[in-house]
Image 1 (cartoon, protein in one colour):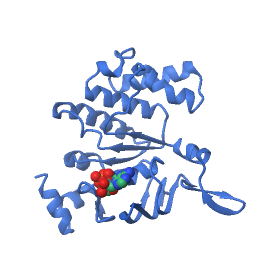
Image 2 (cartoon, helix red, strand yellow):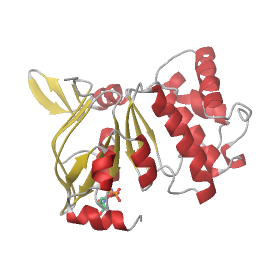
Image 3 (spheres, protein in one colour):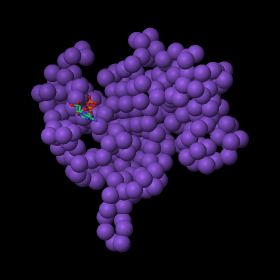
Image 4 (cartoon, helix red, strand yellow):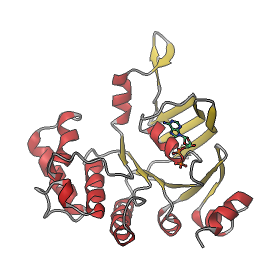
Length: 255
Ligand code: ADP
C-alpha cells in the first residue's frame, strides 16, 4: 500500500462549546483526489483549514508527508509546533479560497511571484519564468500586467490557482472555489482544475457543491455529517448508491 501523504488521526475541533469535528480519521494517498461534500456547517472548510494551518485541531494529529503538522519533537517530547515548523510543513500545501484572496495592489504576475521569492527564496528571474508558465497554463498569459480589479471572477480564481501552483505543492486544497462566481464563470475554473488533475502529480482535496464535478474528478468522495465522515467511497458508489439516509436526502437537493 502506498504511504499516505496526509493522515488525520482522531482529529477533533471545537469552536467554543461546539464540537464541530468529533473524530476524523482519514488517509490521503499521493496524487489521490478527494472531494468533500456535506451540509453547510458540517465542518468541510474546517478540515482543510487545519491542513493549511489556519485552524488548530483541539485534539488529534495531522501528519503531512511524514511530519506531524501541529506538533514537533523537542528533547524527546512532542510539543506544540512553533511558527518555523508550521511554515516548513505548510510549504508542501497550496490552497485556493472561495474569495480569491489576491493582493489588489500587485499585478497578476507579481501576485504569483511573491511567495516563491519571499517564502521559497528563489531568485526573481526563475520566479518570473515559473509564474509566466503557470499563468499561461491557466489561460492568462496575456494578462500578466493587469491588476486583479481588471479581471473577471473566473479569471481572478485562475490567477489564485496559478499562484498556488507556482509553489509546486504536493497537496492542493480547493475550498468551494466556484461558490462566489457567477454561474457562467464556473465552467472555466472547473476546466482548469480538471487540467491540473489530469497531470496527476499532486494530492487534491476539494470542498465542493458541484456534484457533477465531484463525480467527474474525484477518486473518492467523503460525506461529512455530524462531525464525522459518515460515508465515503468511489463517486459512483457514494453519489449513485448512497446507504446513509442523510446523504440520500442531501443528494436529493441536487437532483
Ligand atoms: P462547512 O464548510 O461545512 O460549511 P465550516 O467548516 O465552515 O463548515 O464550519 C463548521 C462549523 O464551525 C459552523 O457551525 C461554523 O459556524 C463553525 N465555525 C467555523 N469557523 C469558526 C470560527 N472561526 N469561529 C467559530 N465558529 C466557527
